[in-house]
Image (cartoon, rainbow, N blue to C red; front, side):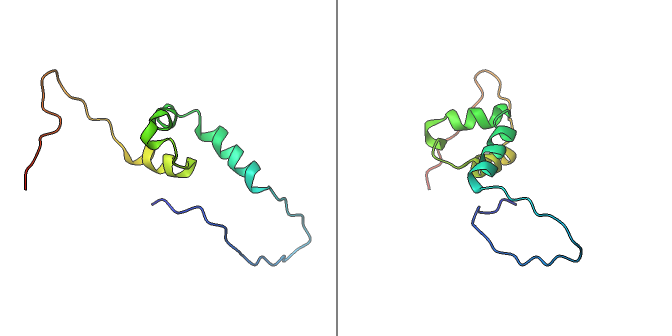
Length: 83
């Protein structure tokens, strides 16, 4: 299931001494972009004008949902249905 990328809050209490590393939102998105941009399906989906405005997370959800369906020459792919 894909989730919307909305800012959130959390309370974290330390139980021992430690350090917390932080990462700015844009840096995090850059890391995600590098991680997922190598997937050919994401590059292809983003190259389609109708999908070009989708966010990286939306494209990732879409890429995970689509499946390849082979067709043979002359086979009907879409048939108009009149209701």
